[in-house]
Length: 243
Image (cartoon, rainbow, N blue to C red; front, side):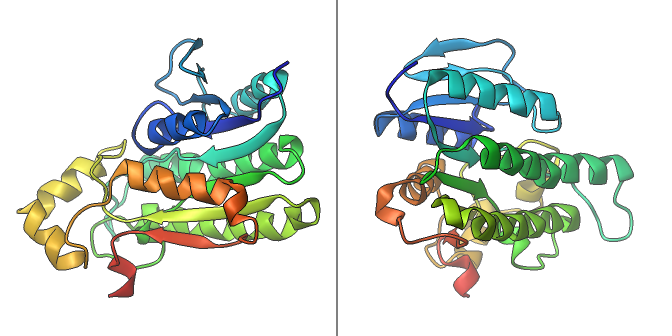
């Protein structure tokens, strides 16, 4: 067993999750990271990559067991997520079920595991979206509802785990320079037409945020520098929610 602190990162096989895993390694942690696209376990660059399916409780439990075998689990980051095109009147039941199972129920499975395994004084960070705070007319009602529920779950665990000194927070990314899994990420961009012009009109900073910027915010919330912050949802969205 290592003396180094250990982190568990879901959605760690791409996008924000991969950036977070690398950032936590740079801060000196061992990281167990992966997602459903990770097909086999391997270890390199301080990251143990393994399949983690947040729709499967056994898979989530196995990830925590693997992390605990390496050392004390100090940080847990839930950066998994999927989005589908879900029009208000015609969204598909399969897309509804998949979105809620991955984004909301998957986060609850992860939070449940974190409550069992994270070290006292540790930190948990979930990844929400501006869609959970604003009612965008972009055929994303199910995604938005799943992220609003994720933020509620984050607050419940923040209160429940506070006596152990475990802090639980969320980040709220805005439009990213990375397309999410599911069919809606690419279609939303296509629906905006001139993407750069649309982002300039929507985001006060005039650009998408990068996955690295989101990773830095997550690393901050997971660090001792954020020792007084719990139950918060930190916007990383270029000012979109301020408009």
